[in-house]
Length: 266
Ligand code: FES
Image 1 (cartoon, helix red, strand yellow):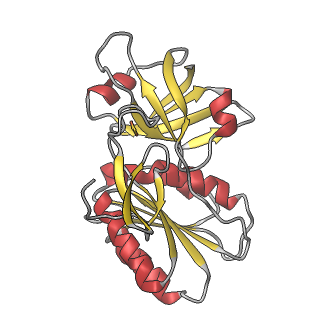
Image 2: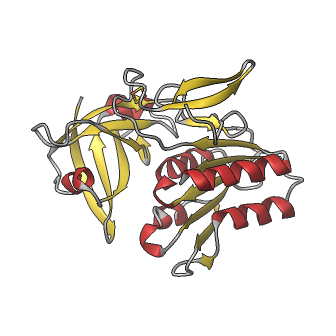
Image 3: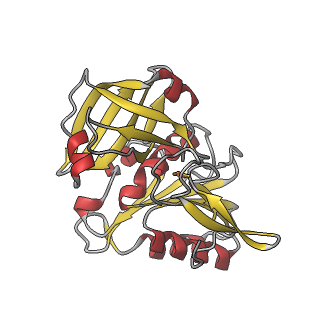
């Protein structure tokens, strides 16, 4: 469908949030799902790009994505003004399977531009008045790559912000903060939900396994069609025969970290 741009703001440096009017998508979107966008009228760029949903409001009939303008596609997207139209497919994929149990703690980990689906999940999770509160660990290498930090700060969650170079928040890595949190509060039943660079997700999966905590990860892979036709997003997951191919655009992009095979070629 063609979605109309409602607002488009420059958050910081090359970080933007674009809000689009698309009631069917806004009504059905779940945290962890994505949309496939096409910008421009010609043949360049030729293929759509996937973007995780950052916010969605069924009341407004809108959803938004956050992106860093740093290539031809996203720089083209940055030129859209309110009233413009963007071709959108979605919502696509399977999102997080999150707990609505008020006594279960959600631990949300966002690394760099992996923050959007974690922000959408944080908005939904905090609407369940849970005790203990949901925890968000938001980190990046440096301040310019830290995404969504002001929006996370508006939510009633326990927020930990880190940068590896210490330019914002605590100095350190999200994996160190997660390890410390679990070590200090292992008695609280928790589930980890994470999105970010693959190395970070792999490390988080290992930490979750070492503490015996359930963990779901939203992986990033190339997605040319987003609908199961091109096999460009094929990954390997465990099954009873050892392993099988899974299409991240349809079965994912969220997987249980203990079923995802990090080191196996497709
Ligand atoms: Fe084409 Fe998944 S993106 S099959």
